[in-house]
Image 1 (cartoon, one colour):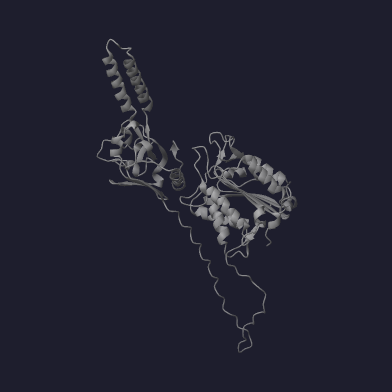
Image 2 (cartoon, one colour):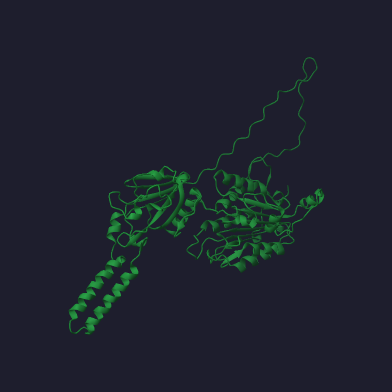
Length: 513
């Protein structure tokens, strides 16, 4: 099977690795994945696109720059056009997909994004001479691009939404008209990393987004037993099966005229090439002149594919010696500041002599307000009580659930026992300070919900904890229960923790995150 002509094909790859909005976590793996995909498309052992025919756009890419680059590449394409995007995906109230760029606002998807429909229309209009047009989306909610629900098979009209193809209505028995367009080898396809309602992930410690990583692994290793070339459909099926085995969001494929079966790449996996040779001699005749039939060999059973290894569990630890001012919330900063301002006013009035009759009262009043303000605005002095009570602790997340440990013991929460999870400040304050904590809602029927004793990791059991730290009775399962006091997190750690909670526990943290 012939490969698409590299000299008549083009590729544009976009990887957005960072964002200015704090609510959109950085995804350095997106930019890394785009760069690596570009190298593979240029590799002669896979496709061999000329270097100038592959364009990579990074985090700083604007909407205008992306559209202009795609337009120019599409106009120059006569065989196959590949457009790839990796980054955050946003959806608006109308369930339309927006590809998030560096200045995207998750609350207003229309700002700082590239609407997928706009990109799709441009690809179709400017790429009218291309034989095949391939769009690969590795982002949350990318399945929206298919205009279909993940629970049902796509209809002709739904595919028309994804491919901007006019739906054809055939009368009963008009099979020739129905299949006529499927034989010309032309067509579009859209590959997405997740269904319409699902997020996409970067597995903890992985260099690429999960879907992109599977595509890269398949292209690099090839597929045994399929010959010298592998189709794009082969690559997608391999990636889908591996992600399905990990219980990850299932990639989606939308294709017109079986386009993914006509697009091929070189297969790097070892394969046997059968060459014609002399005919093998027949069986020796027996004594009676009759030929003896050779005993039939039992066909060899194909070796089962080795299941992919699970990623290492995500683990983060704190020593207990961190400065609580770096990761806790002070709820009394404003009143403390006001008291300090009043103290300064009284002190100034005493100096200026406005209280000539009895300046001592002004000085005393000033001192009282000064002390009260300092006590309330306690991040001016080390919060010794918080620092004394905080203990070393570790939080681990894997496919079995969530585990916490501290000097007083370990606690495990199975994945099935967790109803919801949240990361926010505890409602009760310690010395005017509210620590950041991981909270869980447990199912009423779970074993964990019936524990009689409770102490969140990082808090001494012998200390009298604030009310919000105490174990609530299992008759109130909808109350948030803190299970681990968190410490300072770097931005990569925060991103990895978010991804691990969503990937392994299948839940997205609520609250401040």
